[in-house]
Amino acid sequence: MTNSELIAKAASVLRPKQIGKHLSADVGCAVLTNNGNVYTGVCIDTSGGMGFCAEQSAMAAMITAGEYKIEKIVAVWRNEEGTLFVGAPCGRCREFMRQVDEANLDTTVVLGIEKTVKLRELLPNYEWWTERVEGM
Image (tube, rainbow, N blue to C red; front, side):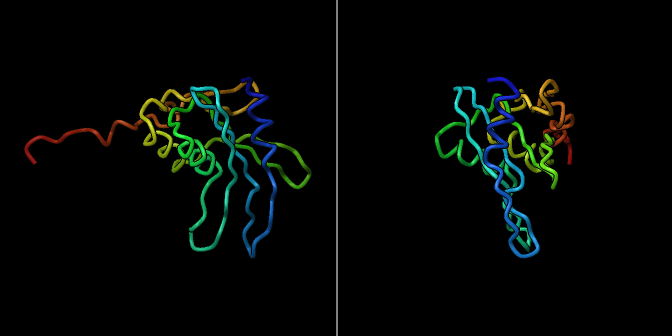
């Protein structure tokens, strides 16, 4: 699947809705698994920090279907003029992808039609938690 096709899948689930002071479903995500399946999700923004990101929503659908390895992931949103933007996953989502399956460090994160990075490049110091301290 091309980056453009994955971006279009993520954009297809955008349905912004104002809920009180918060805007939900204004960010969409599409995840392509190593098995070739695509899962989508949207962000839910609520008060008190109970919401979640579009990436987490898409990954929850993926895990519900019994899949854990992500080949590509993209998140998008539109401004008031309707211009579509691609954004990098937040730090929480980056770490969530890594914890879902260590192989996801090689996930391609789509940052544009022709721009990508590997998840490991966005988590350059992911190994620092595994450093063992002797004698303490």
